[in-house]
Length: 240
Image (cartoon, rainbow, N blue to C red; front, side):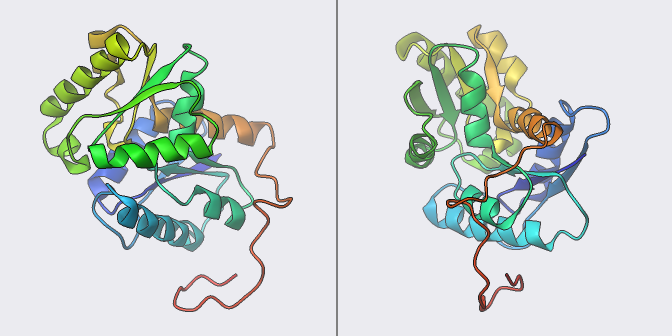
């Protein structure tokens, strides 16, 4: 089984970190391929960058030459999953939805701890669109930019732990989702500090994608995610 894990930004080191985290839970025989878009922002922290990333990820995935069995979109709260589902005949798993759905198996309410406050509405909207908002206690911002998670990991852990504790104590969350692909592999430290299960979206998405492939299931092509109609696409190398 080969799973493509698409970073939504152009920071190669973050792609590599995400891929390492994904491989940590992948089953023997599952190959994880990290994908970095050829254009876009070095971090995604707002609507402009998110919509740009949606196009960039579709470009990167449709440009991949070898066969693959599933795709993971490794951006928390980002746009574009629906476009990939139309374009592809393999399962597409978004880490925002993967983390939230996994969290609901582990506790009554979950909270998300993300990067900057401006990303909170994007995550709230994504959860609502996916029908996963009813059991979300809160979405909290650590105050750190995405790239700071990599450049200052100790400060990142402190900021995430602080907000996770607030979510547990004040918002009554029983599970915490790490709300950024760049937070991969921080689960143990945050769990030790809070005493609750910590869910990473990338690792959740890998297990979900593997399960769908093994069951022979993929996106329904009836109506909503039907293959795009044949037409000329101007200015983009990929043609329908």
